[in-house]
Image 1 (cartoon, rainbow, N blue to C red):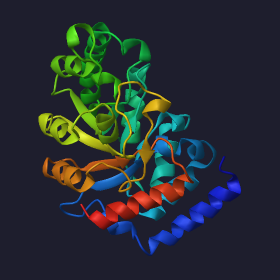
Image 2: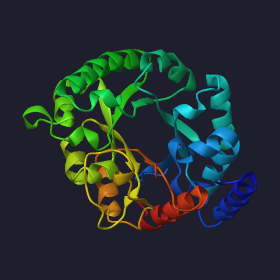
Image 3: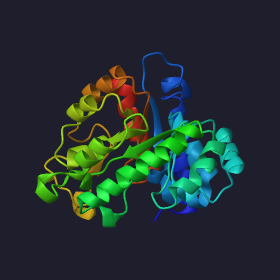
Image 4: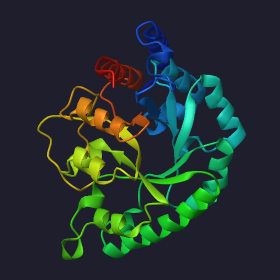
Length: 288
């Protein structure tokens, strides 16, 4: 477990990266470049004990955005927004749990978000077409309410949605056939698409009119695909160290008009600040 002393040491190390990766390396006003950020699930443990500190470390590495995660929603909206603003990071998106989603719409509006993302269906709904139909109905209703609040509703995939269910249909196909594309947009997680045996470039192209955001983490060579969540599906590694063709995928995303890409490596073998720094170095190298 990372101690307070370790975290301070790693934050100081990240600060040293400013020379190599200046804050404007991927600035929001860079024409023709994706804007890179970090999903706070990746730093969920650090965010609980020192949110301001881990945000500053993210900013000092060179990322210009974060995407919120529910672990920080114990802060009132104004207070949370100030903490983020003080870090120098931008804030366009946040994840909100399926349960109680509608009750967080005004909170997200107060934060000034552009996108409200539902990251996962309740597990009880993963195994039947009826469960995905219920999700589609909920998404359409929430999408209208989120639109009326001046934002966009977005769904984030994992791998369970692609498992064949009754009659060979998948939850993904059920969702895509039932949600209103004008009300429900997508945040594609490239890792989880790959884990499910999908071709991310194809999925990106097939839903080009819906994809607003993407998630990034690499996948180790030789890992088995599947639809089950849990340790057997966790083959995470830093960008550039795995098998996913990032330069081509990120170029495609950019050409399709996607602006924001968030690093979201669920677990790291070493300290998380070092992992984020390594992935950022790769993004800087490929310069997409």
